[in-house]
Image (cartoon, rainbow, N blue to C red; front, side):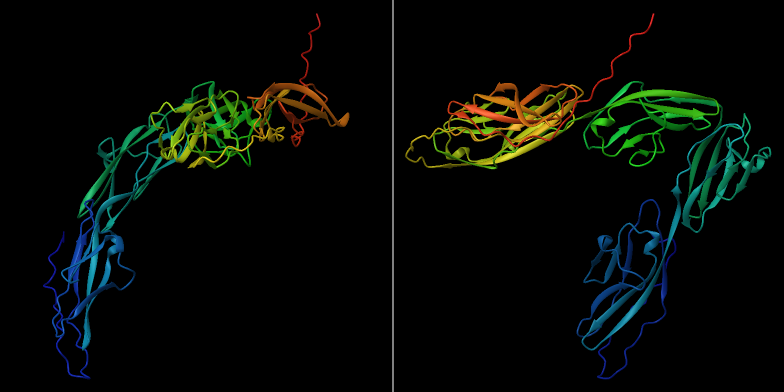
Length: 507
């Protein structure tokens, strides 16, 4: 609401002029004051004009634009309202009245006053003996607020002089503080429209480092996602935080790692080699404290490629596969949706670990079916649309050898083992009975393929035990009652690492 009563607004009148008559200007400009306090008030300006034909009213701001999201016009645009007024809304506003015989305008100057408000709230200050620090009381307001300081509730000018403390308006500077100088400081900022008050504790103490993050904490993250390892610490002087990784003598620093001000170590894109034990070290002049945490980088959960469209004859069965690769330590759970909702409560819908079967389909079963695979760390989803068509005469069934598997991928790479996954090819009406995994030694016998192991035709993954000094490449052959497929395209090469043997101590 206005803090001062403005003079009666000048009412511009637009008379019907003769052709060629000069435009009449309004009388003196008048001033309107508004306070922008915590309530964020509404500014209302009114402009009344007369004339024939009836003039149209428009509003503008001389320097800048009207805030569209907070501005409204009432009474045939005679009243301008600006909600939640701020200091930036001050300035000259132009009201223009116009008809086809001429125009007239009027200027209203708005000055927005503001009670004090915080530009930056004061924060508690912890200093060690002989340290320096700054206590700041940053406020805005119009008129400019007056800053006064108190210590432990007593005006600071009435307290004993302290050579380690100097005051400059809104700032207290501490230099070479001494033990026993702890106190509560009050900052009061006031003007004629109100005040703000803050209590700030200045604590002078000596404290060796303490790490507040729980010891031996385990962080798990999916590969190529950011990892954040915490190291919350306390001490006075404020401890310096450094990080070390097991097996590395020097501190971790530089790209791509990020060390945050709160001590957290960020690995922007974690890889399998980043797994291991990390040590955060908090250090100040009074001591050193170490804390160990562990990072486990997991393989992502991925649904293997499948068709996004399925056409099935009425009264036959529809099968949606949802085969997944995932980190061996993360057990996925499957959820099926129809058109983004739950599956119908119908015994014709049979959910298996990696498939959904709809028996005796009808047109009502048409829609989009989505498989969602969730683990504790991530998820993946895939959808396919089911279309039901009329049954056609059954053609002669042709049985053939299966197509070769595709999409070979190596995961969970260990010093003496690796996980191989693949996508089966078309079985051509004869179920796949087995998969044969073959390998090539690229170092000693390139081009020669050996059988390594077999898995049942229902599997799409195999855990392979390996030997050192062999440069492996793998391929997969599918077999059904009609014979064996052509071999798949080989996987990328992989060479196991030789683990160092433990030395037997001499007696």
